[in-house]
Structures are given as C-alpha cells and as structure tokens.
Image (cartoon, rainbow, N blue to C red; front, side, top):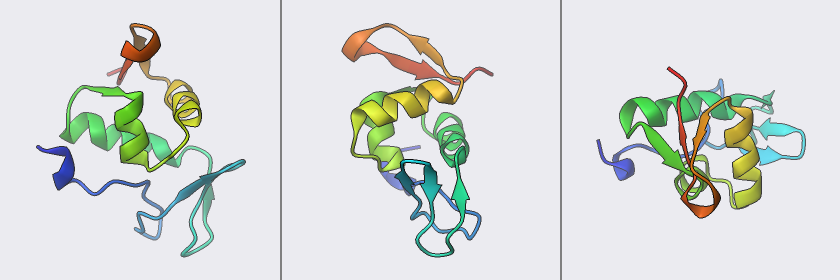
Amino acid sequence: MKVHAIKSGVRCVCDSLAMQYKRTGWHCPNCGHRDKQAHIATLKEWFIFVKETISNREACEFLQVKDRHRTKRLLQSAGLIEVGGGRSTIYKWPW
C-alpha cells in the first residue's frame, strides 16, 4: 500500500486525525481529549499497512510532527527496535 493512500496524523478517540503534540502529550483540538501514548496506535498502523520499518523523516510526515528531535523521542518511547545510527537509523516494530 502506498503511503499517500493512508491519511496521516494521530487519531483521537473522537476519530479525528487532528491530534497535535504539545509539551505534555497529544491534544485533540476537536474534543479536548489528551493522551500521552496516542502516537503508538498510529505507528502500529504504519507497520501493518505501509512497511516494516520507519525512518525519523517518515515518522515526522506520518505523525505530522515538525520537530525531528521530538519525533526521535516519540519513536524511542514507543518501544521500537532501533537499527543503525545517525541519519540512517530506522525503527522496527517489536512483533
């Protein structure tokens, strides 16, 4: 499946894809829901429907997070397997 065929963004419990990452976690501007781990379900969708690895750049685009450093911390906090180092680092889901 192509990446552009899947809508990007972190899904909220209200089914909105508009969640935004703030200092304390993910916040939905539509319903006000807050969740610190909302990105994990979105990452799981990536690994199921797109491919078995994700780079920081791909995660930035898919999660709609502009800060690459924040994206790296989100990927590390999700318990993914880190392969490689530096710019060539990729992440795998720990099936």
